[in-house]
Image (tube, rainbow, N blue to C red; front, side, top):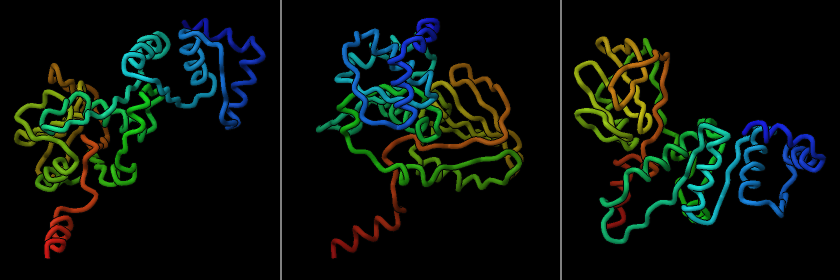
Length: 244
C-alpha cells in the first residue's frame, strides 16, 4: 500500500495540493475522488505533510469503514465516537464509548494522535474545554515522594474507579505497596512504593497482568470528560448560597 502513496509526487497537481496544505491555505476543495481515492488522499496528506489529520464523515458506519481502509496504511487510527444521549438512566451509558472518547482526547492533547476519524454528530456535541479537562493532570516520577491518601483522592477526582483488580480502562487498585492504574483498555501503569517513595514504575498488560518495560515517569490523564472544574467545597458553597 505504501507504494501507491509514493507514486503520488509524480503528479503536479498533488504536489501543488501538498504545498498549499503546508503553507496553511484554507479551505481547499477536492472533487471527483472515489471512496478509495479519498482514503489514499487523506493518508497521503498526513504522510507528506507530517501533520495530524481529522476526517469527519456523516455516520458511524462510514467512520468504521474509513478506519478499516486506513488501517492498511497506518497502525494507529483514533476514533472519536459520539456521546450517547440518554433520557432515562445515566448508569446505562456505555463505558466503552466513554473510554474511547477520553482516550482519543488524551492522545490529541498529548500530540500522539496522527489520524482521527469521527462523525459530524460527534463534533457538534459540546464538551469541556481542554484547559479545564487537563488542569489537574498528574505526573508521577520514580524516586519522588507520594502521599497515598492524596493520590487516591486525585485518581477519583480524575474519574477513576477503585477496584480489587484492574481489568479495564478507568480503574485503579491498591494492594499493599503496589498501585495499578489503567492507562487504556489494554495497558496500565504499575507503581511500586517503598514507604512514601516511588521505587519503580512499569507498564503492565491488563489482560495478563504482567509487568513490561520500566519507566522514569508516567502521566495520569482524566478517565472521563465529566470532571469538576471547581472543588467540591466551592460547588457546595454555591449551592447553599443559591438556596438562601
